[in-house]
Structures are given as C-alpha cells and as structure tokens.
Length: 236
Image (cartoon, rainbow, N blue to C red; front, top):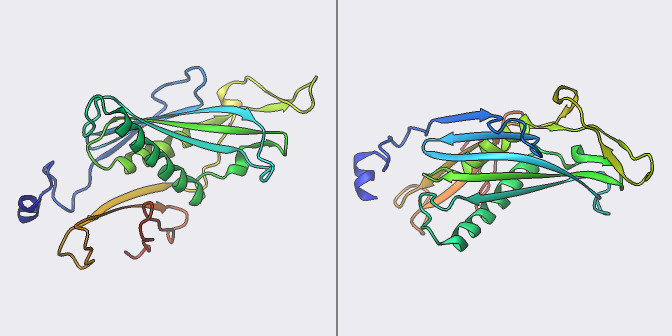
C-alpha cells in the first residue's frame, strides 16, 4: 500500500483520480423464457450480469397496494478474490451485497413497490432481480448497482386481467413486448466508491474506510452511505 501511495498509482495502474471505464449492455439475454429484463455492466475488469423475473403473489396485509422486490446476488466459483471451494464466503458476500442494492433501490425511490401492485389486497408482482458476479476486480457495489438499474430500465410488466372463473385471482396476458408497460424507474442511480487512507484529514483510526454513495439524477441532494456508515452529503 505504501508503494502505491508513494507513486500515486493504484494496483491496476490507474492514477488516484482515474475512474474505471463503465460499459452497460441492455438485454444481453434477449427474451429468454421467464426473463422480463436483463443487462450487463462491465466496470474495469469487474463484470456483473442481471436479469429480472416476475411472479404473481398476494400483497402483504400491511401494504395491500404494494408488490415486493427480491434481490439475489451470486458469485461465480472462480471470481477473483474468492478461492474455489469457499462457497460460504461467496454466499455471505452475496447476501450482504443484495441487502445493500435493495436498500439503495427502494430508499432512493428508484423503485416504488406500489408500481408492482395489480389488484389491492388480491394480487401483486413479486419482482426478483438476479445479479451474477462473473468477476470481481474492485468496485463490485458500483457494478451491481449499474447492472440493477439497467436491468430494471429494460424490463416490461405484462398486462393482467381478473380471472373469469376465480375473481380473487388475476390472469397474466401474453402480449407482444411492445404492448407491455415499462416498469416506472423513478430515479437514475449512480454509485461512487472511495477509500480514506491513514493520515488523511478524516482521522479514521481503523486504517481505511470504504463507503458507497448512491446519487440520484432527479434529486441531486440525495446522498447515502454503506451499511453502518455515515450519510454523505452532496457537497462532499
């Protein structure tokens, strides 16, 4: 670490001010069966692919107008930084990331659970967002958030109608993609990850501090922080 600090470069050769290049591909999985949206985000050498699927369920009694968002993140067996065979380590990391991404998406207003409602107290969409980390070379939270946002922006909600024989149920109509409604994405999120090193003005005694900040395009005053970390104001 001291060598890189002294020479002003990162281990991958970038200067401290240089960001990893980001490339996003929409719908890499096409219209595969059961998939309503997909995207791939490549941040430097970190690669994440996301896909969205839908199921009809019953709304929670406490939120009769709302659907639900489930985020799942899995780490490929040979992802950099995770030794082959350490499945528990990969699973725990995936659960932590999934909680962080879901928190960003809902708390920022990027996804409104009420937009997933179908019939109050009767039916609602359960949206499952699966993110597969194919390689982790740093900035994984940023790449996951980019893949999640692009996946949600590419998806469509199928039309529904009440079932003719069972009024309490709804029937999903199979239509051409162009006739389906896009999922309203209230805010476009970006993510910034930074680290504070020893001897910096922060005075952080633990040696380093990593924070991910979700920034909203439609609400530039929105800030955020990693789990357990401080809230970061926009002017920072």
